[in-house]
Length: 419
Figure 1 (spheres, one colour):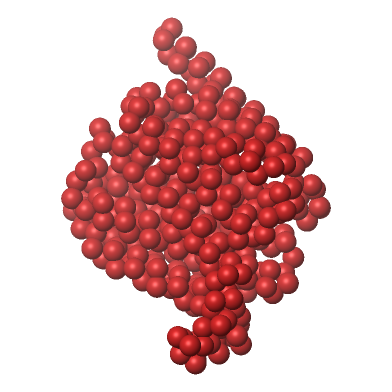
Figure 2: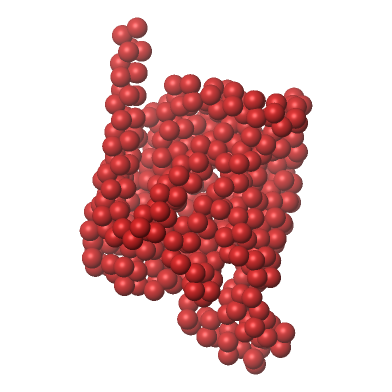
């Protein structure tokens, strides 16, 4: 891999690790405040909202300034969100601020990837990125579970022998209550990520200056979005990743609720079940990175159908011993699906558009899917729909959508062969 690649991976890992741990801590903060359960998925909704609202602007921004520097600044924005939690902001508002930092971070990160890595190494590079992202999700949920565990909170409460008096007072009387020290630990992690970002070398890529007038930016973004959707390979890969990330975000909350309702696990232990999915994604992503060349990425579409069909199987498990291997298997299939299609999308996007703009278009569509699916999920929770039939319907819907994409791609390739 080219110089600076592994520093980029380490920087994004640290930032994503903090993001995933912060989600668990913020859910615990909602519970500590006695907030209703349907607010939990709205945390992710607020986080992803900036990805959609600011998508036309973050792409040109990532192309206009050094991407590593922009990533460091956006880590600073995430710090502001965590400080807001410590100062008593509503958790959804504070997590939305963190999401704004992540929204501008994403096109800089993936755009820099396409600038420094040649196309022949892009699937392998995406394998590295997805493994690091999923490792961050895995360890982030574990870290979040640890930070909200009764053991650690009890340890912090009785730490008068080794903590200064101001820290003990903040932990007992501050707006974040017992979670104050947990949030302070995440501030340190974001600071580490920012320091690593500064160490990422610039790629040297330069793009023509573009208009900063809002209407012109919106028109350019609409054209870029239409161009990527109308491209045969770009549109296919964009459809797959859009479905996949919507599924992943919703499944993250569904597993937590299912673990509480069916397996009767507390939040800190339910968070570890997400780690089982992440372990599987790491294995699937690593296999795809070594076995699936870019030109054969479309052959992984059946994995999407299988992914949808596996979700009802997980929902039907009523014992932890049965649930764990199925959750790992869901992750493996997801990794096999998303890594090759994501690499294909980045390759087509960088060919048709600039690196930053293509990632912004990708982020807009994927996170619009996340917002839509999370909104439906939160509404169904508000209507008190049981989690097991909810997951059944969700999984079958995904399988049907992926089967439709697979059939359409086969027809297109058949027509191309006969032409």
